[in-house]
Image (cartoon, rainbow, N blue to C red; front, side):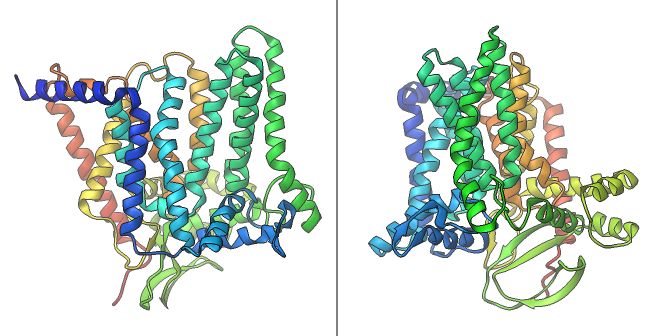
Length: 492
């Protein structure tokens, strides 16, 4: 028996053994890996945005009494701080470290989401079967490249989870026969997609696209009365938005269901779009050692040299953007209209900036989010990342992904990817590209024809090997160019 046949037989045997409880088994594996990772990580502090959410969670409690309307932060919506509140209370009650408690609870939630819910969602949307090994491959990609993200209470992972849950519930409800259950699922989907808007404002597009997806999935069944299904969806959104609306009216006198009651999303987004011109991306330095670095002075977008110790945000300078800034005569964007006018005047320069942001987000040179020492990921890590991206791109040509229900599947894809598209125009952080990376892992692991890779029909395609090697070399070259232009340029 040939080696390929032995591998194929081994894979089939493993699937047969574990297939009956595949979701639960993979979930347990994910939890164990995250739990061990948390135990091995002795860094029990949270920084920047993660620390902010934990601090804001205390606002719900006044004189030992809880009320949603006690919350009065003008910058962040109430959802994520509210979800962090039980961790604060458990830590206070047990005297345990709040970071350790968060990691255990979030590991449990993540295990269920990536091990059970995500494959089920893909199976329902694309009408395919996902076996044990495919689920295990997906989990391995997530854990190998993003496990540090699970150690901090940041909003990116939760927003992606709720976004995908909302889409899954819309599909689930659209195929449900029992009226009560259908309406309940739609209400829950409205709640999930509305929550993403309050956790990260850029996700507000998900809610509107979710309504379109709900309409398309149900009107195609030939009954126009199904348009009434929008009502329970809106009810679900109102359930989530009502507390935020009351908070905004009570504390700020502003009638809006969204966060950013005083510091508007528009103003912050314009600032980030301005910063995104001169910066390819950024990450956090939390080391106690004072180091010399070049960074960006936010006030006038100039590169300056400073001596700094953590926590400090380090920026990777963008050569294309600095050239564009000179062409535009410096300064910030005044409005979206100003951004569009300058884009129309210098389209290729803007596209070069966006593509640099895209590569920075896909390159994953700084996957740990916060660093005690400033150094990019290793060669093997980058090689694994590039290889996954290559084979996921190859999987896009597999027939069947969008063969049936192309419109609704495309909308589902857009719901997940919109935050990444917006992120191309602002100062990039690798975590902003998390939804795109998760889609890449799904394309690779959940490929309906993935078994062919291990089948006896496989043939060595030298053309494909050549393309693969060129792709890998190109990625390493672009990464080296990016790192040569980094803003921190250590001088020790």
